[in-house]
Picture 1 (cartoon, rainbow, N blue to C red):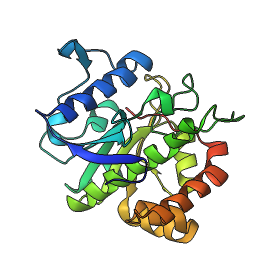
Picture 2: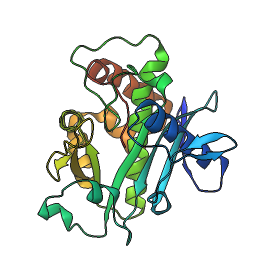
Picture 3: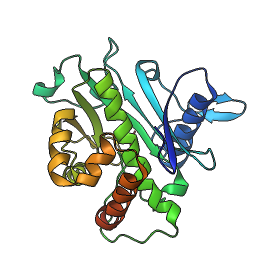
Picture 4: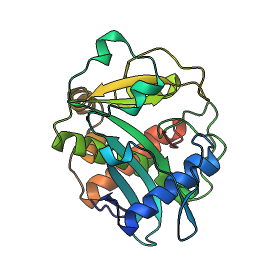
Length: 255
């Protein structure tokens, strides 16, 4: 999908876009966040970040339409015999551990540093609530919000195409509360894991809950998330996001 400023596409192994996607993951998660150890994998001297769940995932890359630069990415881990990454890293509640095969996992959501508001404040799932937000130094910083929400939109579209009813994601509790206020009702799926830094907790969300929540909360965000890709709708959403959300949000990343 292409908006005025950004293009979102599914990237596949063996292609240059996929390498660009893995390179962005390495830059954010290995070099900047240092949350994922580098595996010393390279292509033409460019370091890449990859793991065993990639072959069971659908990968999304966002590029700046004007420059062609990779500015955001994420993946949806599909149900498979391998299972999901989150269940091996977090203790799961009994009532969520036995979800059906229609359950996926959102992960590796990252925004390029030039679009992030505060490079030193990195959250766990694409958003961060700053108690005393600072204005963006330039308009490019404001685009990080649109990229992050666009990545969520693409993931939920893919989930629908694959018949996935629920998605897991690991994040900080403050982020889950923030997402719920915006209209993404994430529910607790297990206890907080203090062994990871910053401490994060497993959550799950259903597609039905997102549609129901957004339909009664914010019409511009609903249109942006569910198919309105025309310029007037996107401009309306961007204005609403800047006015309503950006004072409380700093879109960053999710491992």
